[in-house]
Amino acid sequence: MRYNIPMAQYVKVIKKSELASGAGKTVFVAGKKLMIANVGGEFFAMDDVCTHAGCSLGTEGILKGSIVTCGCHGGQFDVTTGKVVALPPTKDEISYAVKIEGDDVLVSV
Image (cartoon, rainbow, N blue to C red; front, side):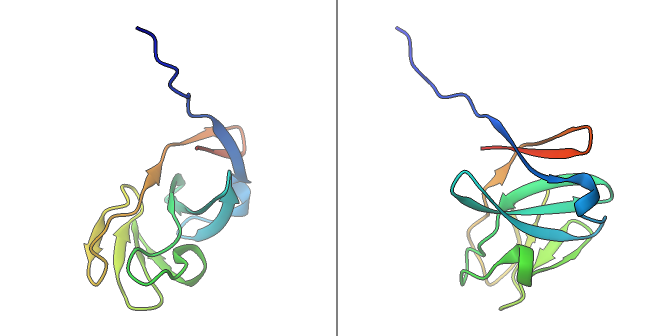
């Protein structure tokens, strides 16, 4: 039996030069609002909306190392995995695969 399973496709979201190390940014791609984070030159992507109160992690959050702290209530997530590391959120963020092509940062959606 054959199944038609859609292949994830990579979509360019930013240029590496647009996001300094230690910074995060909100982007919109394929109908999704994502946070892109640059952790020491390595890029990560996860859902942007805090699972606790719906605040933007990319625009209101503070990135320190690989941990983003939500600007609304102080919840924390590891941007490398999307996992909650400090309450009040209890639900992890969805994370997305990232690849680099030249100066382009692409996310699998």
